[in-house]
Image 1: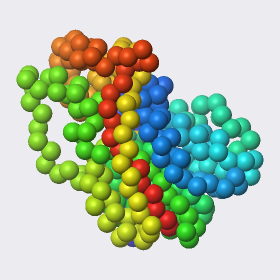
Image 2: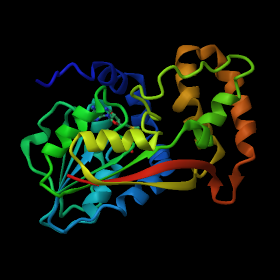
Image 3: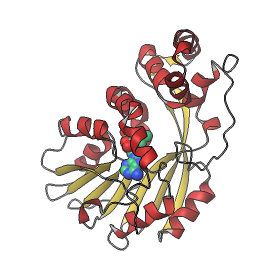
Length: 280
Ligand SMILES: C[S@@+](CC[C@H](N)C(=O)[O-])C[C@H]1O[C@@H](n2cnc3c(N)ncnc32)[C@H](O)[C@@H]1O
């Protein structure tokens, strides 16, 4: 029996401050992670009339990008547990108005996902937050037609993702970072270990599983924009939500640190991900 409370903690998390932050910073975050999502999307074969599932679609950028790859017979369903992020997604102008796009408030681990049978599934950083990833991927596989492709992008370890670690390190002398007790707990880096991802997908019934390492330099057009992301998202964002008294010193130090990464094309910092593909 699926438990609708299985992801209660994450539902709370993505509907409270964090979901609201993502909704508020949607333009900046989309610019930051767009190249990484596109790298994963390029690994997803799609026929023009496919019905595609976008898992943990958030504010919907990738849902509309998937629609751009389809013809007028195609459909995309974006599912997410975050009301504030889905509200942004529903209000965006479609970049492929001839394709049917819908957004559903649903937990990928436990929900029937609209009851349809999908031709393909995709996710940009939306699959690392399940309390029981095997159950979630089994649920997703059951909603896919046999042999249908899955492609997603997830983070490699934080040590390889300077854009997330360097802002937090700016305060380490004042508030030391706590050691990670369970690297597999739901969170952005839960899929950093490639063997774990292979096992989870295989146990969920997927085959032809591949993980390809991918590196890019990511960032937004202005230093101010990158400072905003750094202060509100990732480990430093979590610290400042709990201990806002460090905000001023963090702003000053992070701005100075980021200057070293400012290029004529905006801020560029190393990011490392896995591009994962599999078949239902
Ligand atoms: C890091 S955000 C990425 C959002 C979006 N894919 C993007 O790239 O902009 C993770 C997303 O996964 C969603 N999420 C977390 N757990 C989920 C679950 N069990 N079912 C569906 N969505 C979930 C969150 O609400 C959030 O929108």
